[in-house]
Length: 218
Image (cartoon, rainbow, N blue to C red):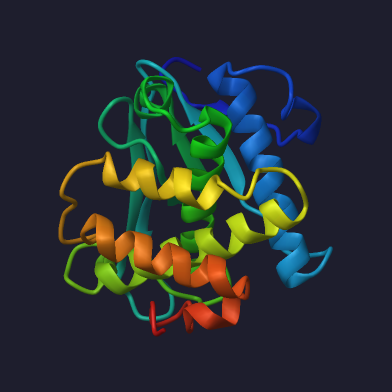
């Protein structure tokens, strides 16, 4: 289908198969799925994964939350709306992920950490039963983004413990976040993001991040 994003099939076997972005995305999806199953059990609900390649664009969801009537809306647009979670899917964008090739961070680690952050939003909607659409439109977004950074830190700690990444991974992520600029109100400053991620990493326990239904509460 023209302009449709590509389905990503999680595959741990691709984690050592090279640095092509589609390969890295399939590895990241498998790593995230493993953490979700380790955290919530082998029968845990898992997200789908989409690769936003050049020219991909679509409105994938538009309606009302049956619980309270609030708007539910999401979609993707190559180069603009890329790395995010919506409509049960973690979206990974080609244009934005290419930037990892020009940073000192291992691209495999960078893509996986982005996927882990977006998995935090999946947990907020699946386990926390939160409609993120209206939250992402006001100041409440900050605590939810912080929660996702904390969960990504927990996830990274598990990956390091399993030997998927070296102990220096958290320092690489710190360097990566610092290289992304001054930050903005939704996700916070680099220091706020790093603090949340390291909080999760140091404790390696999702409970330390607080409730996914109300955001980050260290």
